[in-house]
Image (cartoon, rainbow, N blue to C red; front, side, top):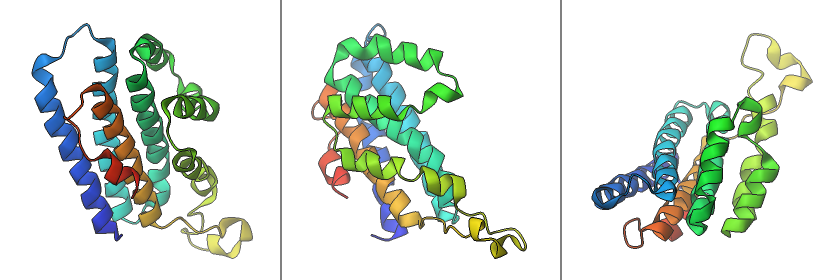
Length: 192
């Protein structure tokens, strides 16, 4: 798929989230911690995916990688929370207690993904990009290209957006599990 095809797929996922939340919104209970967690995850996914698309369109896929990592966290949380409503309090407490060092725990992410039944391949691809973020795009300043340590190429925008599309599919899957019939299309996006 081209960059624009992938951006359009993310746009379609965002529209499904918006429309689905408009459908379920009138019957939401303010005391439903699972619904609060899922709608919050949906909100984060909308903003994160939009920012990832914007950065990739401007040829900054390396700078989009931390946002992609957070989108992975958000997608896993949506699937994990949708699989068991009793997890809502733990998810909410983790959000309140998070400092920068606690935000991206790879072991927690992998554990929750397994518990939610997510394919490990999608997460492994995201986690493998950490080195690209740390070392990619270091040859842009004058003369920095002469050093071998700065020669790591940046990932192309398309693989970054492909992962973002899959993660948006997992967000939709979590929402659809909680509100069946309101968030269609997860399977198509997850297989992109």
